[in-house]
Length: 382
Ligand SMILES: [Mg+2]
Image (cartoon, rainbow, N blue to C red; front, side):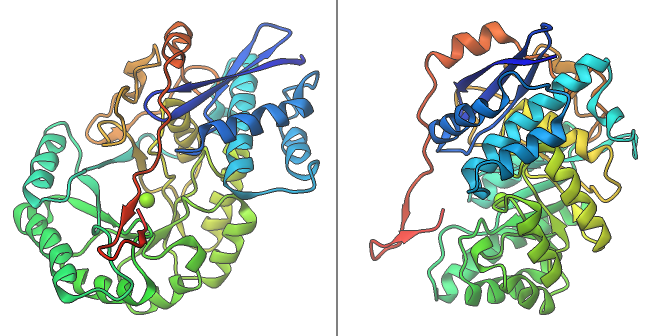
């Protein structure tokens, strides 16, 4: 079998799908994207395509190394996201050509179902409580919320109180019926992160995510030493070489590689194994579309240390399209009692509605991150 063509489709809300075709008629789908930089990743996918046309898609390990090492310069958000989507599509082709789900090729199931959690948007406690109630009614018991709005480098006690009061109201309303992680989203400086985590401890968040930016990763072990709350990070780390450094430094309890940003299934399987060796759990990051989610689930179902899976149903970013709009086998993604079942179709387990993808890609929005500014006009982390 030979790879003959790569086609990319930028799509609402802020996604990109990749179709890889072969001379035997089997096609694979991947989701290479950096949210807000879809065109840049698209260009990288097609540059990497030069290495792939005419090659045997079954040699995923070799093609991965060729894309990574063959170009001299490597790594980073753009190149590793482009490679991630290509890698997903190659696994999809392999599974389809052998007529088995990808998880079967990775050694088979290590669990029967996978716990999912749901984002709850909004910053007003009332809105968040309504959101949780709606999601509880359909079986979720685990959630993720933003830990705070923008926060100054050294901010005042009113800003701390606003963040803490929100969390306190949620814990008071639901008691221990629910669990919630708090995402600081890299918005918080190291000095403020220490204060905020300390103040939030009585409300027992399940984890604190990106308490500081990945660029400030040397603070993860320092912050972890001062709290019993698990620290999570990884969505802005792109290869096992970056994860190696944070695992060696210690401090993280939950690793969150993104299957569409960190080199795909091939790379994230290795990252999952490295985490297990360090007694660190895995919770793949996934605020993206259905192919990225399917890739995550294929890793979750073969990784003993996977603890919960993020998914984007109803997430505030999904404007113009929802998680399952572009796939035909929606029922395979049904969440029962807050859990996914293994995807059973050959390959990644997604049947892409190609006609709709082509139609909707004609008017793909140019999604951009909101730009936030502090009161003094300086740029704030979003
Ligand atoms: Mg996050």
